[in-house]
Length: 473
Image 1: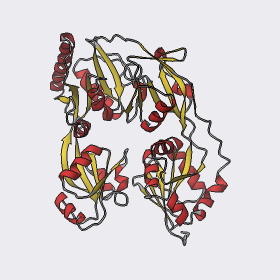
Image 2 (image 1 turned 30 degrees about the horizontal axis):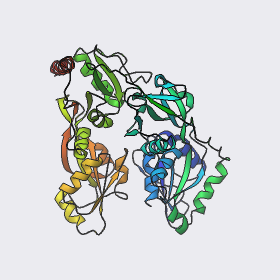
Image 3 (image 1 turned 90 degrees about the vertical axis):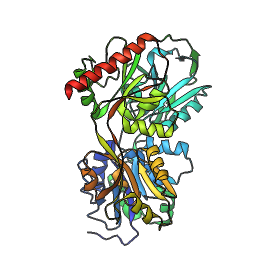
Image 4 (image 1 turned 30 degrees about the vertical axis):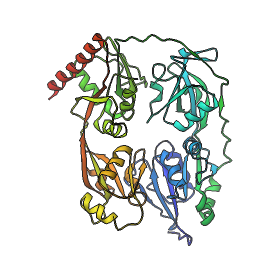
């Protein structure tokens, strides 16, 4: 092992889309991170070449935040997530060092083609609804377009399922404008590039000598291609029209991702025919029973989307419903049926080396610490409620977008996480000190007055599911 006789540099490396090209680059640069791969079992990486290098793997969206707050000196992420951070926090302590030349594509602005006529966007009431997992870029877009009225729906993803019924404009991360324009969507422009870039914490750049590490990259980087500038079709005119919507139609949201196979089994057992779900082509509008309009979206987004009236029914998890209700206690969303699959526990997790076995012992230990307790979780509102109810004193909730186990113990003191068996938690040398509640998949709806026919359809759907679950038992 080559010793670097300088202060240790902490580097945040991405999982997901950039992992493979970054692993190849770092291998050629001699960083000695052989464990950096999509098969990595642990997020903390040990360098076989430099004692002065400490690396950890994160979801890419988390990296600009971790570098900005100084947890990491260097990071690699896409320009899209860097821009998303800087749009809202322009004075963040992040410096972009250079483009790395990997990761073609960008964040494209698209609208439903049927609502775009000769440069005029047709809306229901003059309000432009923008759905995206890039809410800060969406807000910048609304300002640049000088939209007089707009609403932004922050999403976990699957924005392409929302037009035209539930959004006029969406921002999509795609490799090309042609890819963004499929499925009846028309491109309006490019809001951001998503090439990989190397970023640094501003204070670290001043106080630490990074040259020894950065110089290992330079021989293996060709002159990075300058990203195409973002562009928009301007000006975009807005016109309101009255789109009559069938008051008797039931709008149903089904989950994407790994839950699809489970949901399909329940639907089949209930005798509910849904053609094209799951879809091999990425179709987010499968054909359902008569009187039903179906959209496939992320389970995390469903409670909010049902609450604001975009859907009448949705299949999500009780964990995400609970997180929503902690944020909006007066929300009209309620659980209608337990689907009895997808069982997980929502648990409080700490570093396995801590001499605590319960929340009370953890609280007593934290009272001796001067720093606020850092609570990391995808369930931001559940984590906030738990920290307050558990009387943890001063605390800070750190939002995460997956791979939460990576945060302990360096970047968080407590995790609020879901688990089936606890094996993943144990593998990362962590331990459970409390169980908050148990969660299964469920059907959610909202308190609302509906037509007699719509109510009959909703009741028939729930009755069929109940009979199907009985047959599966």
